[in-house]
Amino acid sequence: MPRQSTAKKKTAKSDPIYHNRLVNTAKKKTAKSDPIYHNRSVHIAKKKTAKSDPIYHNRLVNMLVNRILKHGKKSLAYRILYRAMKKIQQRTEKNPLVVLRQAIRGVTPKVTVKARRRSGSTYQVPIKIRSTKGKVLAIRWLLGASRKRPGRNMDFKLSYELMDAARKRGNAIRKKEETHRMAEANRAFAHYR
Image 1: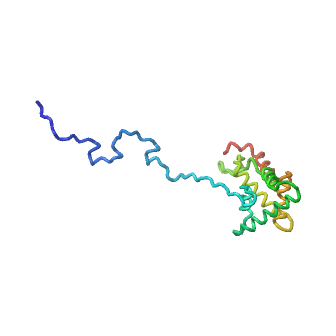
Image 2: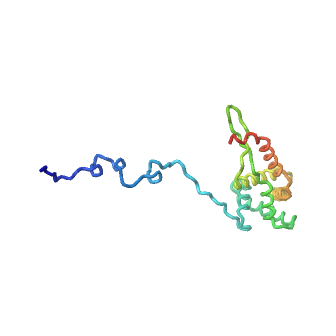
Image 3: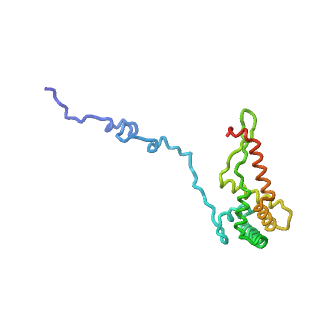
């Protein structure tokens, strides 16, 4: 009869020369559980929501105030916007928030053009815009048009620009139409996205 050994058999798991990650384990590894597959360079930032202002409790008003803001003088920016809203209310006898929303909705572009290089030449490619980006552009255009307006002070100019934009007039509306025309003219390059 062959003699049986009483010594324990060495297995791959108990042998110290094998690293734990190299040994087959019963648990099946997936891309999520294995740290090799984790991409640490990709980080998706959480979307920050704009706070609302103290009087109207509206995020849109706060976005507008933050764009009016110059040299950190936020109280001055609030004063300019609130005076402009008061003038809108006196002139139109409507809720100034309704006029502000109409103005921003009227100026918000649906598409814009972006420069793309293909085989040595640059093409203006029309690209659809998300709603938040469109609002940011609309606010930027409204403030730019109101700053260029002739007039006494900023609240006077801003109130008139907002009223004009609500009635589908003014330089901000012209800027939106110009952007849409440019996108329509370059429609042939839409496949270069």
